[in-house]
Amino acid sequence: MNNQNMNNITACTNESHEIAINITRKAFVGLARQGMLFHQGILEGCDDALAAALAGEKARICVALAPDADKNYIHLAVADWGCGMDLAALTNALQLGSAPLTNSRLNEHGYGLNNALACLSGGTGDWCIYTRSQPGPYYKVSGPFDLKMTVTEENTLHLPEGLNLQWPDPSTVIYVRVPMAIARTLQRQGNRKLSDLATLRLWLIEHLGVAYRGYLELDPVTLEPSAKIAVTVGQSSMLVPPIQVPMMMARTEKLEVELGGQIVPVIYVHGTLDKSKRDHLVLGGKARYYYQGTQPTQGIDIRLGKRVIATAQLGEIWHKEDGTPISRHNSYNDFVGELILPELPRGVLATLNNKTGIDRNDPDWDKVFEALAEFPPQKNAATFSEDELKKKWMKILKAANPEDEVTSEICVWPTGTRVDVVDKGENGKCDIYELKTRKAEPKDLYQLRMYWDGLVLEGIQPTRGILLTNGYSDRLQEMVRILNTLPAPNFPDGRPSAPYNFSLATHKEKQLL
Image (cartoon, rainbow, N blue to C red):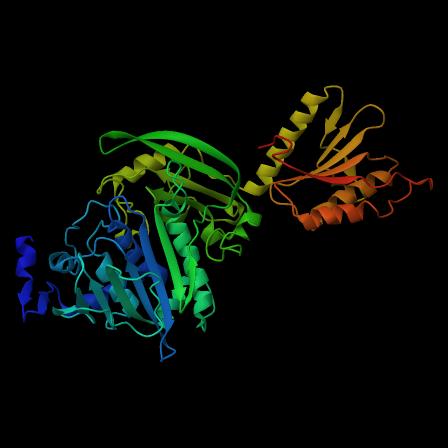
């Protein structure tokens, strides 16, 4: 135990201790006004839990939610099964700005735990911590914050009824009685009256899955995740899945940047928002906070090691020619990506307190962003990607049949609607294609049918109509079958045309990936 921590501990009895906090009472109220959102406070608790994971073991974390008798509050607990804290470590954790006792980047600033407790509790509310570094009694310290904090030794956990910690015998439990108004901040612009914990849990799982995707995804060597995170509401438990950026037409740039006196490999993946993936991203349901195709969510994620430390970065990275940040605009709504940096020593590429963003005062970030300058964000990414897809497909068709006429210039109907791709060849061949970067939707088939009917009404007989997409469902296959049984229009002179001949194909099948 270091001397500073020894000075902060006063023995009261054999079973209790006092910790002196070197700060004024008003400081904690001030901490609560820093605008930390509900999920950001929980992420701080999870960061500490991951940093405390035992060497060689998978981290286990449980985030437990339970209703309070007062509907204006909920009970929250974050538990882990790591190394726990002895009295000196607990004392250190409750000091503002104290040097972290681990080398983990997840313990970076020395403000996080106090900041999270202050914000989650409203500054003067109830909280407590149970922790132990070996089998036996827990050290327990309870809020609200004061200039002296009493630590007692407890043989059992005394938590509000309904909090389910998933697994027995945790090493550390952080409990907070959270005002419902604070709990609702995990929504972007959600229901101000929301009190359903099952719905709150889905929002929270999305936040956890994005922030910790690097811990939750399978390691390429061990084929195991580095952590398991459960979120419980009463006896109902859900495991958090890794939530990846829903991206299609992705491009990968491998870069090298000098940071901290060494050359660091950097991976930058960028592409177009895949709305079909986005709509099934969170336990089979739609993501509701991230990757919405809106101005607040456009841009890329930044991942440092296994932790996503920032999302929706645009003007924070790229600038105009005059040096001002790129402004958010609807033309960037489909632009997504991920900047992946390796685990780096503390002090290199600094983050804000609680890892709610990057510290732009750190010049190392300028080096990273300068490397990204040659890959500016793509405006109207979805349209651009479909144009690129058409060009690539036309090139493939032409290579396979050099004598064919492959074009994207044929228009139908009085509106001048342009067919995506037409491939004309010998023996009356006239294949038409509708291309989509995303997963196929029913309206895409009707667009293909519109092309077909328009050509027939101009006296041209299509031979095949192919919808070429990122993927399709069994129901859409059934729709194709039904469409092919419907009558096609007659030619302008009244002669019957050939039956419809629609089909589906994927980018992968046609080697478009």
